[in-house]
Every structure is written in structure tokens, then in C-alpha cells.
Image 1 (cartoon, rainbow, N blue to C red):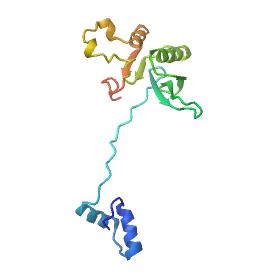
Image 2 (image 1 turned 30 degrees about the horizontal axis):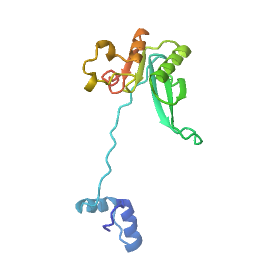
Image 3 (image 1 turned 45 degrees about the vertical axis):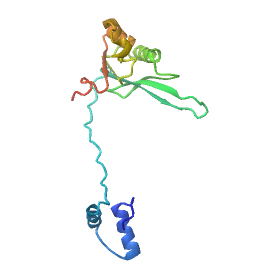
Image 4 (image 1 turned 180 degrees about the horizontal axis):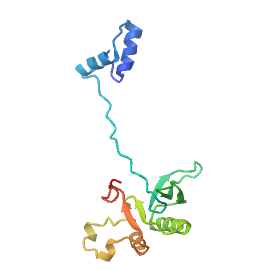
Length: 173
């Protein structure tokens, strides 16, 4: 009965099977708790789903994912894609050897060529989207150096950049 790693329902079945002892699941669970043999599962945190944007082009999500996409290719590649939040349409996606400024700029450019200028771009906090140089050798960086190439390009196009987990991204609709 004290075997570790078995759930209360598994122990209930074994008691009935091997010893003809019939106890409810809850009774067995209470006994296990009393003898500190039961570890309840951690409850998953419930997140409220964000509402989708009401119109196409209001929010474009961009992300990259690195995998060995093709078994015969030994090196992992990055798939970088943009998706319209309102329609779930993939605007552009392409494989790249790395996720960097050049690949991300191409994905943004191709997305604009396909659907036109959008209002907001939602991305992660990778260093090509937001400056991460706040210490060490870069303490005295000028205000021009604080902006990344992507931030500058988006600003020129009047596209708002929203970074994951920023106050703008956490607003409830």
C-alpha cells in the first residue's frame, strides 16, 4: 500500500484486485494524505484569452522557431513568420539559417508588400527588436544607439512595436 508513484485510483484497483478490499477513491486519497503519501497535482494557472483584433492589419504577430525541420538536413534552421491576429492568415514565412536583423527585416518587408502597412507588430524581446545593451561596455550609449534598426524602420513606417510581456501587450480588451 505504501508503494511510491501510484495514484489513489491505482492503489484502489490493487487493493480490490489483490486483497478484496473495497474503499472509495476519496477514502484512499484521505489515507494517503494522512500518511503524507499523496502529492496533489499542481493546478495549471488559468489565463484569460485575449480577444482577437477586430480588423485585418491592426496587429501582426511575428515569431521565429528553430528546429531540424528536415531530417536529412543536419543543421537546425529558423522558420520566421508573420500572422495577422484578426484573420490568423500567415502573411509571410521563410526558413533562415539564423534569426537576425536581416531575416526579420525581410519578413517584415515581404509582409508589407503582400498586405500593405499594418498598425502594430507584436514580437518577442529578442535583441534585434529591442536594445538589450544596458551595462558593461555600453553604459554610455547615445539615444540614437538605443533604437535597433528594426525599431527605426518601423518608426519611419509609423508601425507600433509591441514587445511580449510589455504593458501594451498585457492590456485587457
